[in-house]
Amino acid sequence: MNIIDMDRAVIIADESPELFEDLFKMVIESLPEKYSNLEKALETKDSDQIEMYAHQFKGALRNLAAQDSVNLLQEIENQGAKGNHEKAKALYADLKPAVEKLQDFFEEGSWRTYFSR
Image: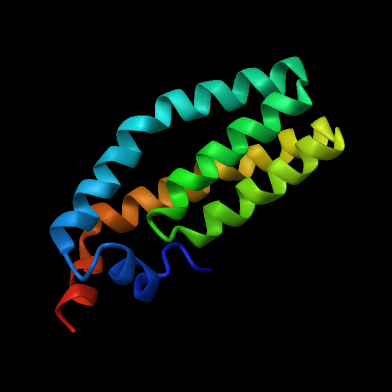
């Protein structure tokens, strides 16, 4: 399991734990909208919207080097592009637990040790 690729996160945040924290908070604040948009696209089985919103969501989490979640969203995006709505919806069910693990990892704070190496 690769909740966050911390080596990559340190590079993304230019070795600044403060910048990483700010990035994380911005992503977390955007989650309700990202979930809502993707859920609506899945409910309406709109392939283009599934693909677009999964891509946007993926981009936000890529800024945190959140590889597990990025991989899930890539697969949701791929399934949306193929019109496999049920598969995309099934994958979406795994997304929230993955993002919750990401939030837990951030809140417990051990990520800060990677910035002091």
